[in-house]
Image 1 (spheres, rainbow, N blue to C red):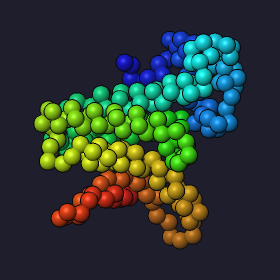
Image 2 (image 1 turned 60 degrees about the horizontal axis):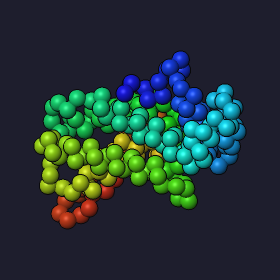
Image 3 (image 1 turned 180 degrees about the vertical axis):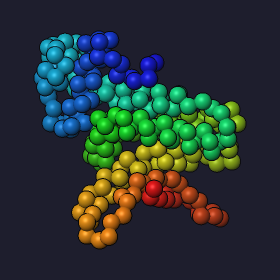
Image 4 (image 1 turned 120 degrees about the horizontal axis):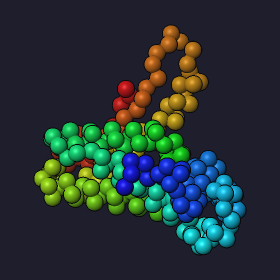
Length: 210
């Protein structure tokens, strides 16, 4: 796998060009507002060729979401399993955050899909399964504790890696409104993690500003 799952434009097959065009359009406008004809035009192919490769709009969406999962998988795979469990977790979180920063269409698509309660949950399911698999691998290699459940560790991992992506736009909007109304300051960059307060209390998300 290359460092960029979309590959270089010169290397792309027609199928990959269609998938990439769909990601960009869906991220910008939302899948419901984008026709197959619009995707085909953006990719420079015919609608019949698009249908040959993906059959339906559901098939095209599945390919887009598989691409997003590949982005996450590539980011994680680029981090060596060296150091303490905390070091590995921090390095992976940084790698995912860097990948998201460098790929705005991935972020925009995820925000549209994962925050829509009426939309399909296939992307969330795929990302959850990828995270679960990574947690199991780390447990098998004794790189993380096995005293907590896989479900708890998977949820914590996803909250750490993705939580800021959903909260930061709200902070940005508030800051844009408030900036200049007092003596200045630095806009917070959010970090989200899970913390257990003690006893039998379940872990809770904790948001900090940087």
